Length: 142
Length: 112
Image 1: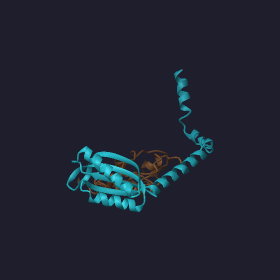
Image 2: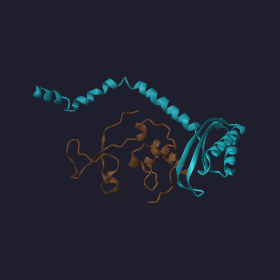
Image 3: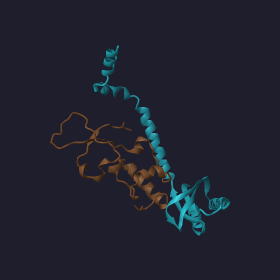
Image 4: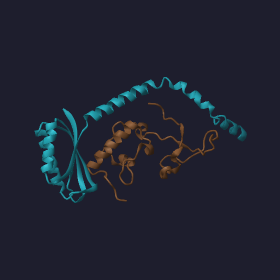
């Protein structure tokens, strides 16, 4: 099972309830094709960076789902034949998330190891002539 | 991760570049004076990778505000030498920008 992000843009002139209906349809298509929807996010109406099917705006919807390649294939086919969907894209995210998690673990390990060498570092600071100055000023004032 | 180094990098060949006054702080004369070759030397703060600094592992194509910083006015991907991004992160930024372009979050080419 792989994890995918499917993002699609719905025409902005559609009514809210129609968008809801469309999303519900897509969800059932995905689950029928053996997928498991983890999250449905409505990113909302946004300006498009360029015109798509003569639209300057679009309603973005994001699905995060788990499934096989066939699930995505079927869902993409459905999106393609739906006229109200003007653009869609699927990104496989499981490997990237895994790598990100690994990086996080590595960083935490390093952070845990870091504190030991730290005490050795400060000796570098006294070279700066700044530190002796404030007491001198304080003495002059008093 | 190594601590952010505060070394100063002489900008030797940047004199002729029009974008010489890019994000990095202005030139500041620091350290013991003395340009050995007689050539003027400017010291500039070393650019550090934004993603390393902020500990961002996964660069999402949906965060337009973040990615938009790495795109020029015309919509081109900015090179590493201007942004200071480290090479692994530059690769993932480039990928995120390309994805964002595909789904109309960023433009392929912007009119000027």
